[in-house]
Image 1 (cartoon, rainbow, N blue to C red):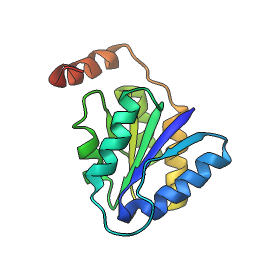
Image 2: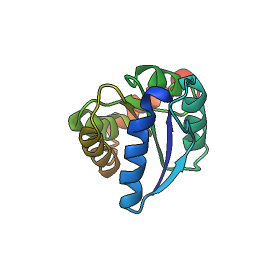
Image 3: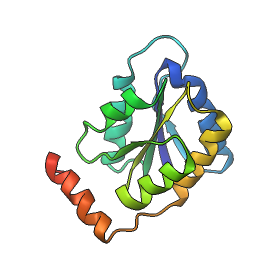
Image 4: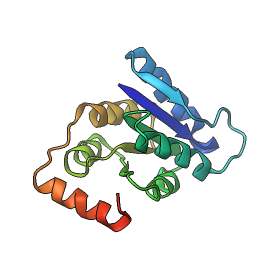
Length: 146
């Protein structure tokens, strides 16, 4: 499994903790920035991760900004992305089962490292159910032409 990671300055510390956790599980991680807590603009990193996932360079992406809101909104502007801001394991499970989410967004200022690890585990271990959910995902993609 390969994961693209990205964050802004507000999400940097949580991104680093998630990166370390993923690497401890022998998951390949590509860190697409940012690389410190100096102020940056989250759209720059959301786009890098989103394009990488859509191109098939990584299976999934994980993005972190202060709340996860801005970075997820930005990622969802890229055709083929289904980024989900998840605040708990249930949301992560449903994002994968029902929406075939390919990017997980987290809030660096709203999510603890322990919570993030559980959310990440649930997101990565849950499969898309397809069926009636595929029809809905297809409708979403029809809005942007996939």
